Length: 264
Image (cartoon, rainbow, N blue to C red):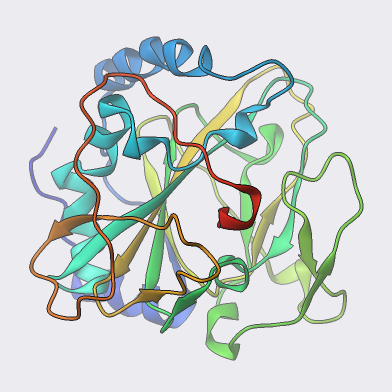
């Protein structure tokens, strides 16, 4: 694969106007994705009885398998185009919908969940499988990031992967763009963009890894999330807001949070 994946001026304008990017060159080749997927069961084996893959968040802090992915230079090139030269990675989260899975991700904005300020975070979504409308691929409302945060409400639904959703009437679902990705491709979206996904009624798995990158000017409220740590990806941190962790040493490891510390 190419060692560089810089964004063009047209792509940057589209991202800032619409709040997302698709159609990016593959980050991982088919052979690379084959190796990555072959290792995934070793990570899944760390789940405890009763846990689901929704618990697999921020495990890049403890797993070189994931740390190498979130620090991949081809991904960092893309992120640098959005955030500039100084940024860190703090979050990762698997969203895995097995075949015939009823799990949904209701319409929401990422930034509503996070005790971070200012708004300067980009999410990279890596497709571990081919993803489309048939197996529950993500949808996003273009331009929805421009209106600021919208009020969310609690969603009482056992099939919902997250617990908050946007109140009805605050956006038009008919405006949504369907994301379609091949395994090894990525999408990018703004932290205030409205997005969600439906169940997977197909016979195909839909696995993806989200990675959260923030500019070094972004500060986490450590009273809300005292376990918050990050890894500096590029540049320097002249702000001193953020606690940094050492790179992991184990190939497969998990990160556990107290409930109040979880940043969805």
